[in-house]
Image (cartoon, rainbow, N blue to C red):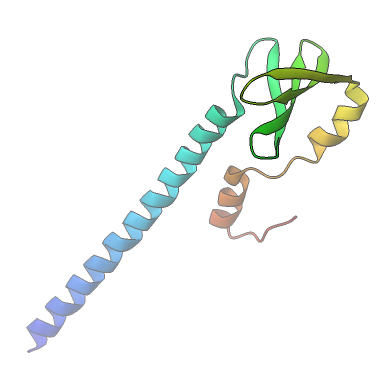
Length: 119
């Protein structure tokens, strides 16, 4: 009887350990998938052209802020066309760049360190 109870306890402990291991694996997988997708969604970023920020407007449109060389350009993007809206000064952009939301990586590292969100 004692052997049966010990066997039940060890099998439930083993199952719990495997479940926790799978949960941790899924968390890391979700982290890397979101990181990969964020690069794909943001689009091309390299050299002299960089997508700074974009926001959806309506069903099929978005407004995108890009940095081309040293200039910041605001574009309207739809399925059919890309339209030049305006050029912005770098002094207008600095406030936007400083107010960017935290990345998932920051939240995850704070969670693993046991820190609360410091928004």
